[in-house]
Image (cartoon, rainbow, N blue to C red; front, side, top):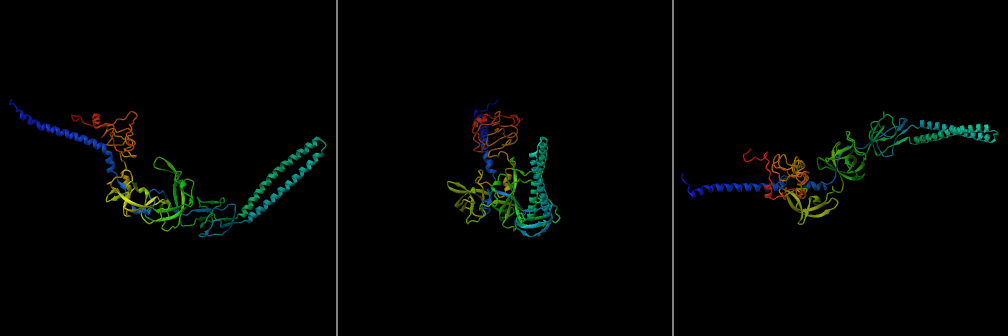
Length: 504
């Protein structure tokens, strides 16, 4: 065999060495890049995936303390009605009102015929006189028997007289009881005669008079007026029925001024609370409860608002109701609620939309309105600008939207971004077999990249807990526990996921 010169042998090996070096460099670069990407992945997801919801300055300043102001749902309904019942045991003599009449509380509506009641009163007085006569007769008999007993000469005679006296005393007690009952009947009859005129229970308008109403116990009924003799509707065309939960009901008071806002446009009305029901609503058998969406239930209560004007309102219209804290007053200047502003060492800033993204923008503020907790922004904003509430996750360059539903859609089914950290139970990076519970690394740890196992970066203890790595303060993935060399040493090959050298 012909020998290859040493120089040619060295030359033929050189490309192989270069190729091996290149492969090693690529592998090392890929490995380093993988871990750098893996360590920074949480931050990138947060930055690139954050869609920011923005509102126009014009709408914010027009609504004043809009956003954190407590709002209640309301619906336009007919004014309060009360039914006046008539006594089935009495006869109506005269009605003093007609449908459409306005009445004040205390005005006479109708009067009962008292002639029959007066005859009954006369009969009661005769009965009373008869009882008094019997009491006088019995008392006289007792006195006579008592005198006879004093002069009796034998024991048998005294015993007989004593027995008669006891019998008369029993009769006397019975008549005295009848006397008290009869006096009460007379008193009630006199009151019925004196109250024969029935008056209006509230200010309002006569809505209906039902001549064919069946008699019932005399009284007023707000719940059901179908069998009422006279129905009165409170003054005003409409009122607004609001709904409040048990958590907020004590923030409302009768007479409290409110602002009423349309759900469709910028229409606004003003009014005041006239009534608050302290009995919970009962709709469709739900006993007045609703689910807050957090696994808790609360009772719902009704309250009622009289608007200053009903112009533009429609029966059945849905509205928003706010306590009037002065947020509806128009002030000179551009007053922005303080919670939109960031007060830093260099001054005040807002998150403002620039083109299709958000930017941190400096603004100049002037007067502060403590009633609405807002600042007059004198420079840096215009009414046509759009700004965002300063959430922690906002960064320069994040995309923006004015569609709140679109903004919320980014959180639907999101994995690895819950409660300020990465993931709830069974959520995290990658696919099946991964979990990253609670805030940061505080739960069962990270268990695999890819599906069904893979690279085990941290194995949980038997109790399923992992050490505190400070993830409560920072929501990005951290490998502070292990160096890159330690990570490489601790890589566990799962042959079900990562193929072996034979490719199987």
